[in-house]
Amino acid sequence: MAGLSRLAGKVAIVTGASEGIGEAIAKLFVEEGASVVAVARSTDKLRSAFDGYTRVQTVATDVAAADASERVVNAALSHFGRLDILVNNAGVNDYQPLAATTDENWQRHFDVNVTAMFKLCRQAAPHLKASEEGRIINLASIVAVQVQPGLSAYAASKHAVAGLTKVLAAELGVDGITANYLIPGVILTAMTKPIMESDPAMKAAFESFSVLGRVGLPIDVARAALFLASSEASFITGHGLAIDGGRLAKL
Image (tube, rainbow, N blue to C red):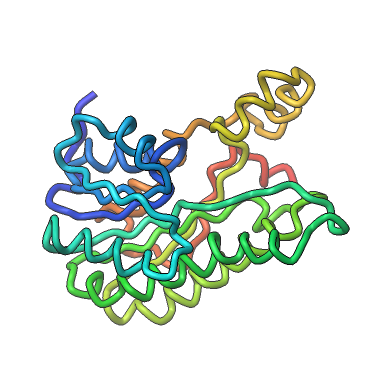
């Protein structure tokens, strides 16, 4: 289905773009008229995901690398001449009980899920200010609202994403930049698919979380990101949008 060109002429950065939610966001943005800098660690996965996409520039880097934020933003400016939308999707999640959570594991969650996001927002902000509709969209998680055992580092980092995004909204609103965060529930990705395929009971449990009786798909999250990136969301900022099939409604 052809897009409606809701992002025509816009330039977006999408991190964690080689698969899953990030790939779906990047491709939907292109379908809607945007040019995209797609960021992920694997050159091969990026090449495979975006082969034939003429309005996609790929950058292979770990977002937690010291020079990543500068490299990524400069790629948008050098290849497309501007920046309008930043989608911070890259993240890590390692299920570990408290006693097994090492200092290194904890730090890696914050390096990728929070610090890299902060640095990209800081690097991008002056260029988003120059846009007529600057947008920051950060990926949190349902565990920013509803936690479960074994996710101390992940849940803490995603709570930090929510807090950071609200401050960005308050601080950057004067520059015409909106900042919002997405709260995905269980989404069918490379992380969750093997679990559901190998464990029917877990698949049933995941499906039961939603009042709709299914898990989410990456495109479900991508459509929410598209809305927040579009002009239709120009008066929405500091908001956490749940894409969870009604899971939080059951709390």
